[in-house]
Image (cartoon, rainbow, N blue to C red; front, side, top):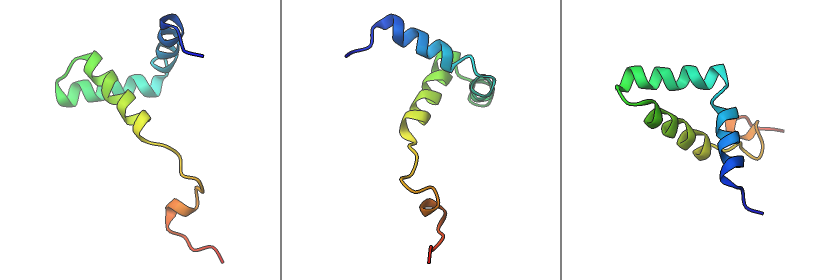
Length: 65
C-alpha cells in the first residue's frame, strides 16, 4: 500500500513538531546560513541514513564472553 500525499504530509508535520527536531533545524539554519526547507531536508537525510544496529552492544566495541 502506498502512502498518499496527505498521509506523508501528516507524518512530516508530526516529525517536525518535536522540540528536539525543531532545535536541530534551527541550529543548522543558524550555523550554515541556509533556509528552513534545506535544514529540514538535512534532518530527514540524517534520520534516513542512520539505522539501528542489530545488536546495540555490538556497535559499542564490547566483547561478550
